Length: 513
Image 1 (tube, rainbow, N blue to C red):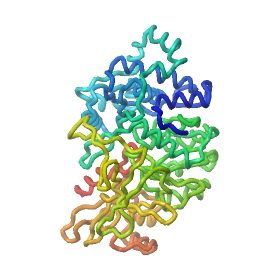
Image 2: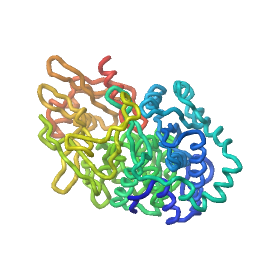
Image 3: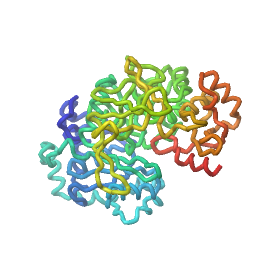
Image 4: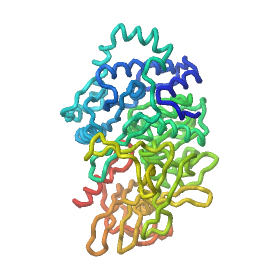
């Protein structure tokens, strides 16, 4: 579908007209019952009108909400009425959320009292000093008889006339990504960027109306928002929204019970699901797409051997809404992250000390409008890189083969310079996984007077030794300089809400150790 001139709201209206109003089991979450397209439109209009009662046009509004249909209604409804929804990461803690509010100049946050209680977020919410809180339970009381007459007598019948005319280039959402010192950057994504990425994904992934997506990735993360919410919404695919990706025993059973055919997840989460599932649990799955972090080879193997499922690995960034490349059933090369999506331009910049590949710069219709930075809150910084204005530097070193498959060599910040040689920390993690498939591993580095930098390996395997790692490196054909000299055993690796390893915490642990 071509959404070139659409906003999220007008795309929802188009989808409803294409796939039908009364698709009663189109969406489902943990609340009883299901939602049709008409139900979703009704919820979107009502919540958008409520948000407009307590905010000003153009205002940035914080949304502190779980994976629920109401969250989609809030997001699309707020943007339909000219507000800018900003998705707060509730796993970032009270200080992280307060910093995000400062970065995007958020004065008002909408949340749910029930959610705050169930998610044990009372302390975090109390930390939001100087920010006005509105609870949905209280906000709904402001929906008057006149509002109900407007909704049922007019807005549902002429939805495009019921909201202000939208601009595809206007901000549709702000997502937050951590800066180098933990201060969040606000990534401003337009309607055009989000809908372009939906179109790009659907050009290459053969999803259709018979599919049902299971999404437990939080919608404050771009993978969960675009892949797990917007893709099914705008192409008629059924969706089951679950509140947390951390319920490793429950999720495989739910996938089986709901007959889901498609799962989006990170490598870390897929590893846990596989270890708590029976082959029957995943019998309905046709596609499992991994992103947000490198797919570990033992995870790929366990899914293939136990469930007969070949994981499709992809790659992207919040700044590109987020998908840049993905393997597909007909174009899949294990070890790569697939071919780039249509309509994306690429520039590889040489990196001193790295022979293979270059630093990836991209531009395309799915690129962000720009950043908000903590130091200059609310001031949009358009994308720009050494390749020129309108380009985004991913910071990743990649290699592209003759057939267009993209291989991520490593994140430029995730290289250690050991004795004058550049060593990818992702290579170190590959070695650890080859030596200990059952354990969880992550590598960082620290300053070293003798060698420039020293590699630290964090592992949950207390039996892992340097001798095991050296043997695994030789087996993989990797240089011995990539074998870490320090091994720190931890009970669990710290994770971000997106499922990625929290390397900031590991760096602090390494400095203390």
